[in-house]
Length: 250
Length: 250
Image 1 (cartoon, rainbow over the protein chains, first blue to last red):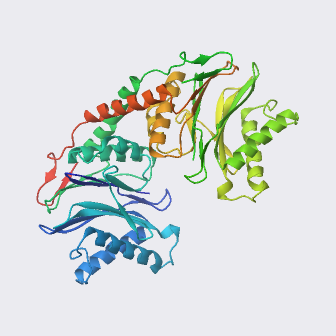
Image 2: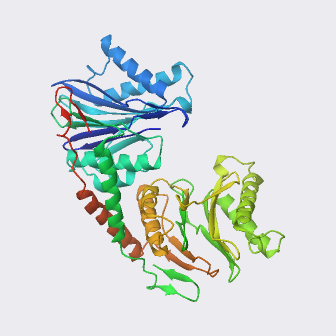
Image 3: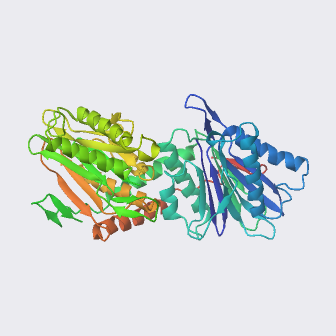
């Protein structure tokens, strides 16, 4: 399994990915799911991947090959990020069908985001079927893989006005909740921060399993959630309690 | 969709269920998913349901019919809760196959819990296949339906030593996170509290959409989560930042 998220706010985009892959729980490996393509001053593009590892490696391989061979269409020359999302979608569908004829087990999905000179910064989710969606002011993040455990905190904290460091910490808390509930999501955790209109390589970090900061995120959030919960208003049993029916109304 | 949870702690069991059913988002209705069976002093059993509405209603109907007809095996005479979970599992499988021959769209799952005189209080999850699991000291809760959004808070807060009121508030926070992320989970929210060894009908509450308490849970938790997040340690960019590669180590 996998968990990747891209948080696209006014100040830029924060990309976060885990690095655990598994074919059954007895066959667990570590692969980076974050790839970057760019030329300073012209474009910076990040690609996060989830799903069948042969498919995702096939897609990354093809994207790199198209760059090496200077194909008419490649990530270093393509005009817009939306075109790039289409292009990744086509390669994704082709790779799924290449060896296997397709099918759910060979599916992969991607997040592609960043900025190309002359365009706004953007992030897209590319589905296994090759189509894509982008973020909105109301939902300024996209997720692939095991997305549900880590969604509530993003829903509550992130808005277009969030600072990039806030987005990064929130994304790491979201990742922490996911790792706690799904063993097949795990470190190293990679974080890439792209700043709007910089068109330069962003800050990139890799937190290993032994990372003191990752442990601090885990400990701090656990303690703060418990403190927050301890001060919740008590349940109002007495208020509308109906002893005759054993039913009350909240 | 549905979200139901049973939290089984030393002090008793807290059952919580939503009441929204849907066949597509344009066909949304309200049905209680919480049914109780009991005789004071002898047994108290609660049943929560998720899945195909025809199947769950068929199962509840059969359970009630077996009681009315005083069948050899029924929920008011069965010897243990484990036998009751087996029995619900058999009826569940039979109902799925009755009209349709079975298949994923007709599946249903159940939580059955409570206490029978002479036994400890217990809760079981009954799968569509008819088999079942129970809670443990490490995982003192079971969930059916849309379980992922609301799991992290249960993981962090609930232990066997939790008070029943704590379990109820935590379950409502878990329900609140789920409702926020999945539109097909919604009020009225029902809460039933069974106290260990009472063998009496527990406290039962129903929070309507308009419930001031439900809104307070939502507001309070939202505010507390934001406060908790605001005091998280900042991300440690500078610490291990490697400017030459654009890579740092956390």
